[in-house]
Each structure stands twice: as structure tokens, then as C-alpha cells.
Image 1 (cartoon, rainbow over the protein chains, first blue to last red):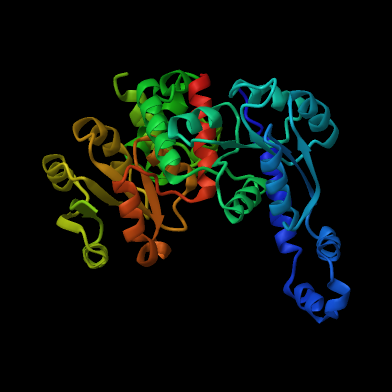
Image 2: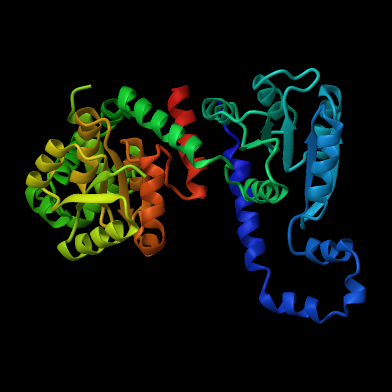
Amino acid sequence: MIRTSVSGIEWNGAMRATHRARPEPIAEAREAVPSALLSSERTTSALEGVLIRPADVLIASADRALRRRLAQSLARERGLRRLREAGDRAEIERLVPQLTPVVLLLDLPLPGYAGLESLRAIRGLSPTTRTVLLVARPDDADAVAALKQGASGYCSRRSEPGLLRRALQRVRAGEIWVGRSVTGHLLEELAALSHRRGPGAPERLRRLTAREREIVALVAAGASNKEIAQRLAIAERTVKAHLTSIFQKLGVSSRLHLAVYALEAQAPA
Amino acid sequence: MASITVVVAGEPRDRALWRSLLESAGGSAVVADVEAGQAGWALVARLRPRLLLLDFRRPRLDVLAVLPGLRLGSPGTRVILLTSRRTPISLILEGLRRGARGYLDRAALRTCLPKAVRAVDAGEAWVPRQMVSRILDQLVRLSAS
């Protein structure tokens, strides 16, 4: 399963860029505009629209009243361009490819979409769309399953409007929106999996040359570049070149990380 | 909040600060503060604390190396890493993969330590929101492989 982290990163970058491109003086300038000119929310959005990438949001729920409530609550949210609604699978399949919304608020079950497997189908329609699930009875294990299927957020249907708006903002910024207890479960599972499988260190170490493996052993023993150079009777610059190559082959970013890696490779599986 | 046992490893001056922060927050009984190193780890293994604060500002190999064993030897111990802005994210992630339940930047210590301790004690995680997607990515990658 491939998560669409690339789009998340791009979007993150865009958000950071817009934050930087949103200097205080503009906010002051806006306050200096006579309030009559800012009578509608639309004016504010139009002003901000230049600065923040506008986002389309699709609200999908079989519950018409809930859709309306969410739409009203989000209508005040800045930086949103179009807010559309879908009531069943057919509408989602029509609107998602057409809008490629930044965020889809998805209230399951929906006619045609029963469970979490629909998340995969929706990603097929628009890989960049980030889905926030709305559920009647939040459950940590269910949330973990949803995240693994590609959801970017998990909220109760009864969440306060303010909380949902915040969730939407964070998800738009490329983050995952779940409760701390869900994150606890994620960590627990990550640790259990890491523990069971190990990092596959031994196979990767085999990709190194004999000289590189010698250097890894010396780094793991705590030797400095200078010491390694002396021990192997090579130039310090050569040691550095070897290390760069080793870092690349093993996908590690620091000496310490390399040492940890080497320790793991030595440990019995 | 249940009474919890906390052991802190780090510089003596820091340990004193963390200890006082925990104790003034109430509910946390700091039974021992220990230096990192062989003797420290032996004490941790014997005490099997409910909560363990580990100094990870200058990531140390022995901190990472000790985590998997701790997980086996004292599964009930929940670890919080104390980091600094300079601690590489990849190493923090490595710590989380090895079973730490959260981490806290030194700058946020005074405001967040009691909250973090309560959250982790309740089985929750204490990591910044931005970290959750990284954790999930790792998890998905590991599940897939």
C-alpha cells in the first residue's frame, strides 16, 4: 500500500510558503479598510484567496441534515473555495474526480460505500484528496484501521464545529488528525512490528564492500574519522568518502544512526 | 491520577529540575533519579518503573540500545524521551520504533511535562501532531514489507 505522502509534502510546502508570504502588514492594511468594504465574508476570502491556496472541500454523508450543518459551519472557514455535498457513492464518483477536493469529509456508511475499503476506492478517484472520516461511535482500533487504509483524519460526527474546522486546517496542512489515544495505539503497533521484523539490517550490510564493512565496525566501536584513518592507513578524506557511500547504501543519516544499525545487524534475529 | 514511579536519567542538575517539576505537578512519586550508564540501567531493570524519563537531548547509543530490552524486561514501563531542538528526527523516530511512548522538547518542559506524564500514564502518546503522519508512514511501510 502506498500512501500519498508526496502530495502531502507538496501541500505542506505550499502551506509553509503561504505562511511566509503572509506578512503582518497585509493584515494591518485589511483592518485599515473601512468595515463597509468588508461587509461580507466573501470579500475577506477574496483578499486572502490571493495569498492562500484555495481549497475545495466535499462533504459526503447520507444524512442531509448533517451535511447542511457541516456546510454551514465550514462556510465561515477562510481559504475554502468551493464547498460541495454528496449523498451517495454515485455523487462521490462524479464529484471527486471533477473537483479533486483537498479534503473529503466522509460519513460512513454511505449508500454504495459500506466500510473502510471505500477509502481505497476514493483514493483511486483522486490520489491527492485527503479523507477525514466522521463516525458515530469513535473507536481507537477502528481509527487505526482507517488510517492504515489511507484516511487522514478520524472524528466523531458529534464533534464541535470548532474542532472540525481545526481538524480540517491541520489535514489541509498535511497532518493527520486523530486523538492522542489513537496515536498511542499507532506507536504500540509500530514498536511491536519493528520488534518482530527488525530493520532488515543484515541484508543491507551485505551490499557494502569489505572496506566499508570494516569502517562500519569501527564507527560502531566509537572510533573517530581520524582514528579510522590511522587504523586502516588511509586518508581521513577517504574515510569520509566511504562514510558518504555507506550512509547512502544503508539509508541512514548520521554516525550514531549507523552505529545503531550495525548493532542491530549483529544482534541475533 | 494514579501514583506513578518515575526514574530520570541525565545530568544531575537536570534531574533535580525534572524531579521538582514532576513532584510539584502532584501525583508523581519520583523514586529514583539515576545517571545513564550500566549502573543506571541495572537499577531501572530492577525497579521496573511505571514511567521512565530518558535524556535524549544528545542522543546516546545506549539509550536506543536499551529500549528493546526494556520492552521485554519491563513491558509495563512507559518511556518518554526528553529531546532538544537539535535531536535528529530520524533518531527520535528510531526511539519511538523501539517503544518510547512519546517525546518532549526541552523548551516545552515546564509547560508540558505534567501533561505529557499524565497522557502517557493513561496509555496515550505524547508527540507533536506533525509527527503522527511520519509514524503512520513507518507503520504502513513496515506492515507492507
